[in-house]
Image 1 (cartoon, one colour):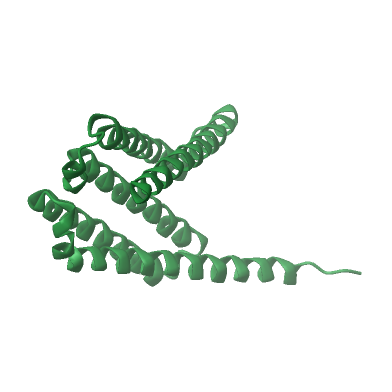
Image 2 (cartoon, rainbow, N blue to C red):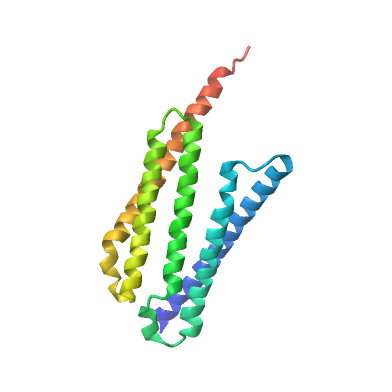
Length: 194
């Protein structure tokens, strides 16, 4: 029973922390949007905060529904811990959609920083699409399995999703550092001190 209590306790703490972080993201999106609305219309990049906020809110609602299903409805039902519920897979699909939207946003941002160099934004977009597609494949396989004890059968799609998402995030980080560093030194070299 101690192992179960520590597992569920950590799960509740992580869900609470996730809710706090999601709230901070919502506040940041709201403040960014409201400031821009006061001065002008939202840019296409800022308009992305709306669907991203909706997807993340759906994911957070599903996370709480998932916790309720396992810990309240399934209290004491240890066989239920092996069952993959619809909330589990809906939440996972929402996480993959959220990551896809965020990676698409950064690919677009990197393109706008230097629209002459298109290879890296295209590569990021393709990796994001691969991660999203393989993530949805993982969701479909998990729904077919129905049990967490058989989750090992989805290792190919799980690993493909994780590798593609990691590669996209790595490219985003390197490209932003590279392009922002080029811009910084470009601005600095224009300044002359007399």
